[in-house]
Length: 264
Ligand code: ZN
Image 1 (tube, rainbow, N blue to C red):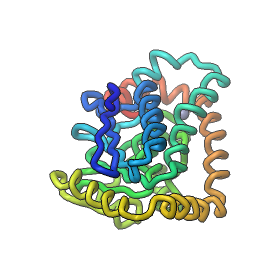
Image 2 (image 1 turned 180 degrees about the vertical axis):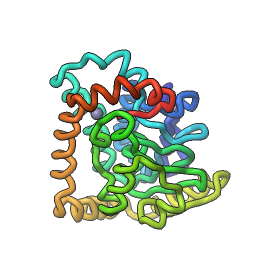
Image 3 (image 1 turned 90 degrees about the vertical axis):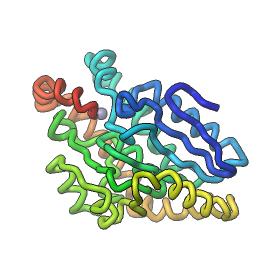
Image 4 (image 1 turned 135 degrees about the vertical axis):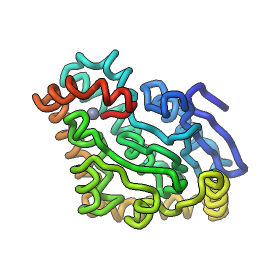
């Protein structure tokens, strides 16, 4: 059941998938994202699994994409190569979680930054521990136009999203709850139990009804243009990857960005 970078646990009808690179603050390498996508395939196919919890091992949910790997393997990517790579590994892998036909809950502690922010917000609900914090600093640190999936205004509201992105500053769990992005804030030592309890309660509902209810709820965002807006942002995000600003900011800032383990 367990692949190397994703820990898989079953609690009756609830399956928990946990990012399992705690020494790297769960930086999302290509291998981690491919394994996570494969585990969502498996959870989708498993009739016993009715709810999926997306958690993380260690002190932090995720500090973002694995910038060391990006620098080592993709620094010289052409426009065409980066487009294809990010379209599949970042954008489509995220959107399949948004579109996953069973309810999902993000279980978040510590840093939830950049691509970590993006990934957690693909889930239907978010439960955060009191020490959790959220940010997307990559415009400041990398000169990139935010992360690939601009989910921020859809989960935060436009003004809150603008402040978060324009400043690059972090918001705490209680603040994120007040903004409507987080459903519940719990003590760190109660995070797993409270998230699982919520998941078990949801899992009692008939699964087909839940599936189509989720589809309808997500469509309420689609009719407001969410999917088109996300797709359009992906295009401009790619443009920002080939700007002079990006090149200069990355050259000046990548070393410190790597130290923080977060990036676009
Ligand atoms: Zn990117």
